[in-house]
Length: 255
Image 1 (cartoon, one colour):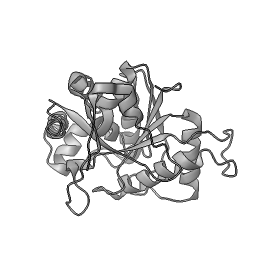
Image 2 (cartoon, helix red, strand yellow):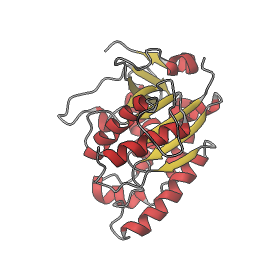
Image 3 (cartoon, one colour):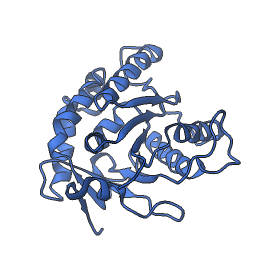
């Protein structure tokens, strides 16, 4: 058990968290955790009909609504779709986010995914988890935050890396009992149904999420699940906080 129960999902775009770790966030919320969902962009390219400012305004509202399902807080770092950069200003902004939220646990995109925005966001989140505690990296109004949060990478889209290789999660969370909450969160992103149908051929994005959950659930004999890999490099926590907090709902696998 941990003393400070704060979880931060640091993702690239609105609805990324709901697709990949919304069920686990819902379970943590039920276990008394405070939930924060952050996106690097407001999703300004997520429409065929609306301009970037109009769709951004809509999607910020949708993301905040989704977070509110878990009594959570939404943050947007105001980068632009396709232009998320691993540069000085964005590094500082991401470190400032971690210092503001002070999470015990973080979720991020996997290092290798289908979209560069996801991969850059993954690197930014990994860096911020570590450098949030470094005093000489300055952020306005925010001092160092320690210890380094426990960092988990969500499964890549379709469970495969950019070369098509299957990525095996080492921690799988049974989200069967909160799948309807996860669907309610995803449904808040109403603007994306038509966009995903046109861009990705997904006519029903909530059903696509359920299908992803069923496939992951097959790994542990559950109706629905979410998969993760923990960042276990030097200087990062080695204990599996998800396992200690969620107990029998978490299955640790040798991969």
